[in-house]
Image (cartoon, rainbow over all chains, first blue to last red):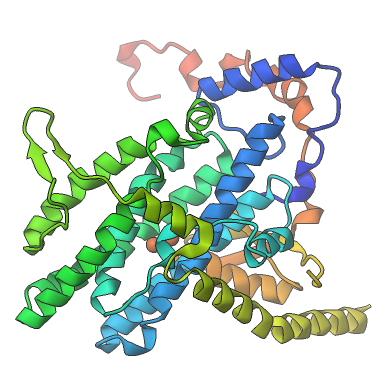
Length: 326
Length: 95
Ligand SMILES: [Fe+2]
Ligand SMILES: [Fe+2]
C-alpha cells in the first residue's frame, strides 16, 4: 500500500488551524475525493479506520479456521484444491487489509498483538463450528455472499488504501461464493441424505449470516459518522435486506427451505419480509461466549507460537547474509 | 510481543510483457529474497504478473503533500498543451 514511514507528518502544525483543516477534509470527502495516507485527517477518522480495517483483517485470518477444518476431508481432489485456494485467498485478504491499516500509523506487530491478546474483535460468524462437508457449501454461499454485500460498497470508501484493498478482495470473493453455491447445488441434487445435509447446513448458517451485518441501525454505535465520512455507504439494515432479497431466490433454486417462519415476499415493496435474528445470541458471541470463540483464539495463538522458530530463523538468515555482504 | 518489526517493501508488478511495472501493495520481509517470495504469494495467485520488483519502503522519497499546489497547479492553466485546445476544421480530415 504505502509505507507508514511516509505517513508521519500530517500531525505537525502547518500554520493552518484545525477547524480550517477539518472543513477542507469534510469538503474533500463530500466531493468523493480520496483521502490518502499522507493527507491530513481528523484523529477520529484515523481511529475509526484502524479499528474497522484491523477487525476486517482479523476476520479474514480467523476465518481460515472453520474451512481449514475440512481441508483434509474434502470429498475429492478437485474440491480439496478449490477449498485450499479459497482458504489461501482469505490469508491474502488479511494481508492486504493489514497493509492498509498500517498506512494509518499502526505496526503489523501491534495489530497481530491486538488479535492475540483478545483486545481486537473479529466477525462473530467464525465462532460457529463446521460440522459437515455441507458447511463448506453454506459458508461460501452465505458467509462469503454476505461479505460481498458488505464489501462491494467499501470499494468506494473515502480512504484510498482501504478502497483499493477492497477492490482486490471483491474480485476474489466472487469465486468463493460460486464454489460454495456449487457445493450446495451438488448436494441438493444428490441423495436424500445429501440433500438433508445441505438443508441442515442452511438451517445452522442462515441466522448467523444475517447477524454478520451487525445490529439494527437504531442500535449501531458507529453507523452515522461512518456514513458521513463515506467509510460506509449503506446501513446495516439496508445491507441485510439486500442480502435476503438476493439469497432467498437462490435457496428456492436449490430446493432448500430458509429456516424463517416469518419469511414472505412482499409484492408491494418488492422485498422479502423476514424474522428477527436472535440478538442475545449475537451479543453472547461478541462477548466471547460463542460455540468456538475459545477454540479459535487458542488455535491462532498456538499457530503464532509454533511459527516463532521460523521467524527467528528468517531473521538470523537475513542478519548473517547482511554481515557476509558487508 | 517479543519480535521486532520486519522491514516493509513496496511491490511493483508487470502484468504482461510490454506493460510497465505498477504498484500493487506492500509486504513485510526480512530481506529482498523473502520480499519477492511473499509478493508472489500475496499478489500473483491468479497470474497477475510476469515480473516483480520490490523496493524497501523506507527508500521511497515522496513530495510533501503540503506542496501539492506549488508543484501541480502551474500545469492546470496550460490547456494549450492538450490537442483538444486546437480547433481543426472538419474538412481537414484526421490530424
Ligand atoms: Fe475474504
Ligand atoms: Fe472469502
